[in-house]
Length: 199
Image (cartoon, rainbow, N blue to C red; front, side, top):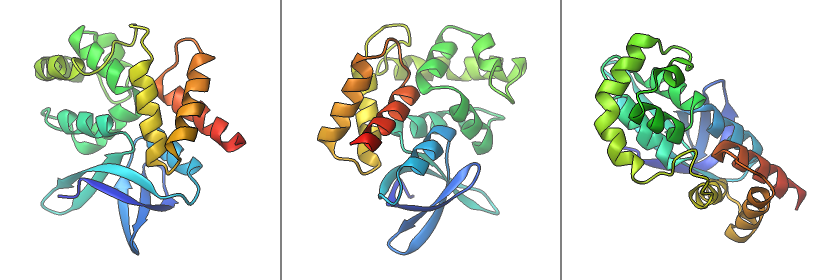
């Protein structure tokens, strides 16, 4: 099983990227945030965490720059009726934190805002994932908790995986975080990347 790849992004599509790893190109299906970050990485090598999905007629790699998104992907495809493309669609539209708390709070409205997820699918997700989300939620902060430390660390890790140095990454992330109010992980990474381009 391929758990991660470290290589240079050489081609991207709407939902995938090709990583050149030692002269071999691997196509990996990625959520929107990871694709956006890859487009800003230039020719820097990046680390992508992966989940290999084996079917009778195909072997595909799904992944993300963020390990927690790959873990969430694995959880999602364990739900009956949720295939890898649907799981990728979910991760592209909602943060892992917001998704986990929607499940724990039986919040069908949040889930049905995701394209492709209707009331029946939302109920099934809540029913099948509630216990798993209880365990996962112990390691993540509530979106409303106000704490920035986990978000800062996740943003720095994302920048490191894109090939930036730790010192410059942490400086950029902490600068953006200190000058912002409530900011999502996606926004923090995007703004930090823009800041790094100024250096």
